[in-house]
Amino acid sequence: MAPVLDAIWEDRDVRFDVAAQQMKMRPGEVLIDCLDPIEDTKGNNGDQGRLMVTNLRIIWYSLALPRVNLSVGYNTVINITMRTANSKLRGLTEALYILTKCNNTRFEFIFTSVVAGSPRLFTSVVAVHRAYETSKMYRDLKLRGAVIHNKQMQLLPQEQLCDKINGVWNLSSDQGNLGTFFITNVRIVWHANMNESFNVSIPYLQIRSIRIRDSKFGLALVIESSQQTGGYVLGFKIDPMDKLQSTVKEINSLHKVYSANPIFGVDYEMEEKPQPLWERVVEQPPDDVEIEPDEQPDVFTVSVCTQQDREPVFSEELGLAIEKLKEGFTLQELWEVIS
Image (cartoon, one colour):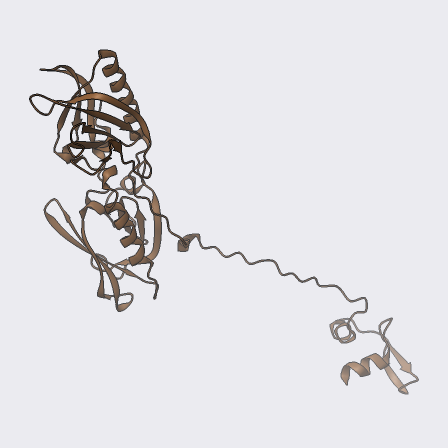
């Protein structure tokens, strides 16, 4: 099996000015919140940008020049705090400080919300990072964890049990240990029948290869973990042979499905997720007013707007010559307009 999932770097790396392809959501990555305008106060002070919070990382990029960007994986985060920073856009203001460590190098990031009085920058990042930290069983190989209770596997929230196999020998010691195999849609778990705390949880995310190999105990199921977990090689003896082959086929199939759409376990959803600025289009509702034309036109308007001269006529009422009135109007109506 090819090491399909070894390429996942989004939550375990800090990268600067990445290509547009690396800023896109990978399979299983979900955009949780999007905030703008946000200033990268330490690296790009005075430059408005957009900050995207996913279930694996924080992405910031400049709105004016998107190739100026950064990607911060949650697994690199050491500390998140709110402190005062000097922003070119806001002056002295509260800002989000994120301290990270990647490849033995420390990086500090300072983000400032250009919108005054908005707490979402802090609450979103902190809440999603906490959800990431509390869901490591989905992503990390774990030895001697609290995964079995009273011979039953403790399923994770998004986990489904696919198969349970009794009589599986763990070949990590010279004599082997008899135990039970649990196969789910997220991971493989084995525990010793005599000691529940002697167990191993292997997420598909960290499996590099699954195959049948020869051992001093005969043919065995061999699982090799990724380099991120130390490259463990774990052997399990399953009898009879047809059961071994069907188990390997089942695990490979589940691993392939998982690889296409990984379940990272970061389950967090904004209660009220405001739309990003670029999506906030306010449509004006049509005025609920109907203008009904008067049956009788306004006398003053008709008189003023008449552009051609009319012939003079004698008015008996006034005793002098006046311009002939338009049909349908009287002198009395004109006097009422003036008064």
